[in-house]
Length: 332
Ligand code: AMP
Ligand code: TRP
Image (cartoon, rainbow, N blue to C red; front, side, top):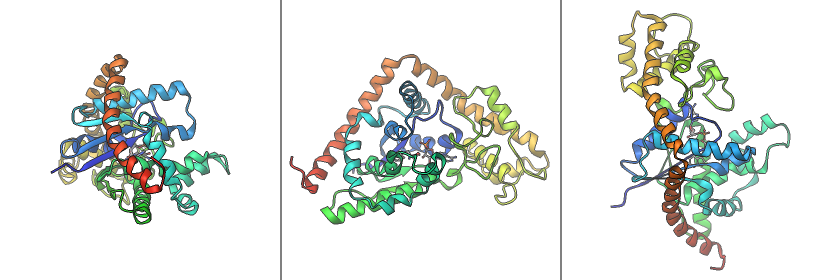
């Protein structure tokens, strides 16, 4: 029997992924390539919604791709590609835009948050249709599972709604995708503000940990992470959100349960605990950083790997699109 399909995308909007991206998404990409037919892409079309500088977008797209391979994606097992190189994504996005209600799109909380930052009316229409392009990304591959962080739940619901609507209007065409969200890591929080999610757009430099960060800086940031009143290392979301976040990070990376960590650090205070969290993070990120640098040193080879990934993705996307066009009544 064919393996179920997994697909996800990540935007090239920073010079490095951060710890939230890694734990909330990228690690799951790597794990699922063993059991699923895997498609992962750099969402450069989504990045265009905020009009990045062309040189920056080019560089960040390669850095993002290199990090995905460095984190463990295997080009033999997973199709890793750049979204804009499979033109069918843009085409399906238009068809789905025509199936989406204005009110429905206007309810997307991520759009409302981002639009609020730009001020009344200044956000691009692309930002408004962003979740519909995301639905196209997902539906075009007849995806079963979509590994993402918790902030993408509403977008995944829209993808399902659009699939269902299209299927009932035009006949069965799309599979309904399921979110794949791991509760323990769905929201890694800002080191300086444990009530907010770690985010490249809103976290301060001290609040965010980059995968490609230099180990010395990384240790310093973790040692300076906001902890809570008291001195006990115990998970308590309501009263100790900072310590709880660090416990989640340690546990996810080391594989040691939170209960075991609490027992191990009983009576030791925050300092010893943070030191170990820093080591666990450095041990994970240092090799990824090294491999990323190696991959970036040979751009031609990296571009070739991505082109091969796009070829594999396109073969699947074309099949879906032929059916979609026919269902809609477009001439062949
Ligand atoms: P983005 O950088 O917005 O393209 O996000 C890439 C992936 O990382 C998405 O699946 C997000 O849901 C996930 N993600 C982003 N920030 C966090 C966070 N702080 N905690 C957990 N997952 C996150
Ligand atoms: N919107 C996602 C994010 O910011 C990125 C993304 C684009 C995506 N297309 C996707 C995620 C398709 C999953 C599936 O995190």
